[in-house]
Image 1: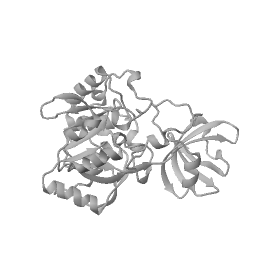
Image 2: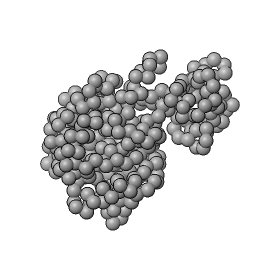
Image 3: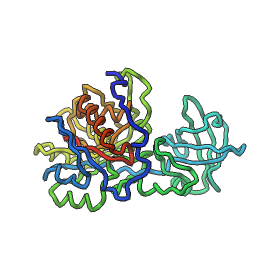
Image 4: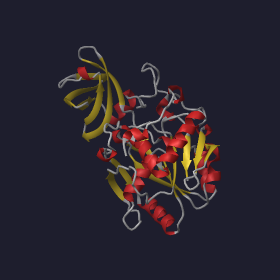
Length: 342
C-alpha cells in the first residue's frame, strides 16, 4: 500500500493542546473488529469492556527531560532535542536552527552545563556534554519535557508537563516520548481493574525517535521504524505465557507495548524474558500473534503508528473510525482521547 492511503482530514482545533484535568475523563471509541461496529464511550468505563482473566500490558518506561534550551558562544538561542546516548556524555540529537549547529559550536544550557557539536549532517547532531555534576541530574535540572511539535507551548513557561506527560506507572527512565495510551490511567483505575480479575503486566520499551519519525517514503515496503530497546522480565514473561496457554486475551496498552510484544513472541507462541531491540515495522499484511485487544490514542495522518493501528483493525474500518472521530469531535494525539480495538 501507499502512505497516501493512510491520510485523513484533521481540523487543527481537534489536536489536544492541554491534558484534561482528570486523566480518566477522556472519551473512548470502542471498535469491534468482527462486526465493524463503532461505539462512543468513556475511558472511565474501560472495565466494562474487559473480561476477568484478561492480561493488560503496560509500558512502564519513564520520559526524561530530553529538550534543552541553550545559547551559543555567539549569543544565539538554540534548541537541542536528545535522541539517544551513544556512549558516556556523547549523544545523538536534533538541533535548531540547524544553521547554527556547525561542528565545534559550543552551547551553554546553564551554570556548569554545556555541550559541543562534534558532528553534524543529514539533520542530526552528535554532541558531547560537559557537566559539573552527574549528567542525569543536570538534565533533570535544566531539561524540559520533550512534548511533540504539534503541542504549541511557549518555551518561557514553567515545565508544567513534567508530571502530566508521564504515566502513573512510569519506572524505568529512558524514553524521549510518553507511551500516551497509558496517560489515561490512574492508580485507582489500575486497582479497580486488578480487583475485577484482570492481570496487570508491566514491560518496558523506551520510546525513541523511531516512534514518531516522519515517514518519508510513499511505498510502505520501503519504510523501516528505527530500533527501540525493550525489556520483558521473567515475571512478565511467565504471566504472558500463562495467558497464552489458557487462551486468555492479551490487551496491549499502546502501540509501544504492541511493538515489544510482537517482537518478543517466539515462533511457537511463547514470550521470552530478556532485553533486546525491536526493529519490527508493522504494515498491512502483518499477522499479529501476541495481542488480542489494543487500547491506543488517535495517531497522526501518514504516520507509522496510524499504519500499525490500521493494520490491526483493518484499513477500511480504521478510515471509517477516524472519519467518525473527526465528525464527533474527539480530541487527537498525545493528550487526546483513545480507542479500544477489540
